[in-house]
Figure 1: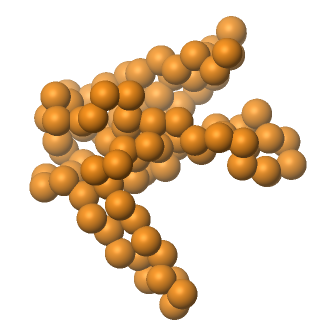
Figure 2: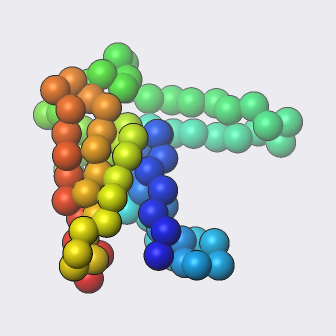
Length: 92
């Protein structure tokens, strides 16, 4: 499994053939649209990414920047928010 933190509020999970197998922590307060010409339209909370962690919807990410796998199918995600945040996700 390959896990990729997306700066705009989620973690994408891929298999070894780069097929998308899941998404974790999608933040519905952040909306991204790629236009046919390749331009990005974004809608996000004020002061993003430096928001207070209490304003982030439960079970979602704001701006994940890095991650690593643990020993038992868990993923640790580090986010860029005020005060920082490290989250643990069990993939069982």
